Length: 132
Image (cartoon, rainbow, N blue to C red; front, side, top):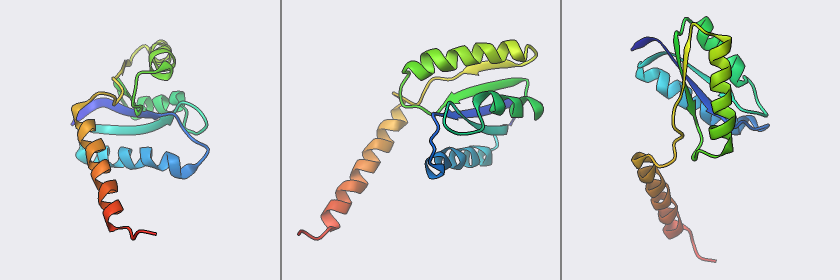
């Protein structure tokens, strides 16, 4: 366990709570793995906690390093501009803490496996569905 490193999972956010629930699920599974003593969630917009609030939770929990993990598929404007700017701003707000923006999920090889698995599940459902 990296005792002083927190993981802050960041998603876009939705007004629909069930859409935001996926990030909380991910938080819980990552916390269970035990690598990070602190795993928090934050949303770019439309939901709370905000990224600033999530970062504050990490700092209050004693983190001296915070990995900002974008729960995004690609490095679009939100990751490249918005999250990069927020990472710099957080570093200025908490000079005693190192903030680092991780790469989005994007082209990770395991994501190919996830997509292939979901496609296989859908294909199997098609085989099982009765024809009209």
